[in-house]
Length: 134
Ligand code: CO
Image (cartoon, rainbow, N blue to C red; front, side, top):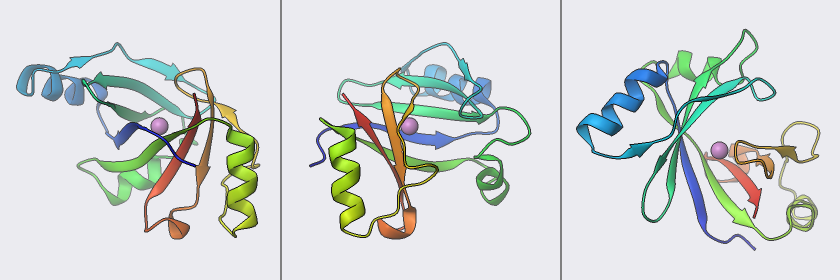
């Protein structure tokens, strides 16, 4: 069902500092930050030859990554994103197997303008999983 690894997301307190580390120290190409108020984050991507790294910085009071960063003040890997061909078919198949879909269970438009869903980390080896329809 899942296809390519679309990105690995890292939650960071300071997007500017994170961008500097990846640009200056690691020599990577990093996109300009984009605010995603619907998701409570500001996002930038590191473009690598085979995948991407997504930086997530909290945006607003109710940011869903605020508590995660309180537990991981230096930043930490937040989720993995796998590509699927049909997000509704994937969701229904996963739910039928007992997997928990976060939020309303309806796909939202993610940072790439494509539908995404998140799956409960307790069902996937302690790792938050994002599915993105490509
Ligand atoms: Co993501």
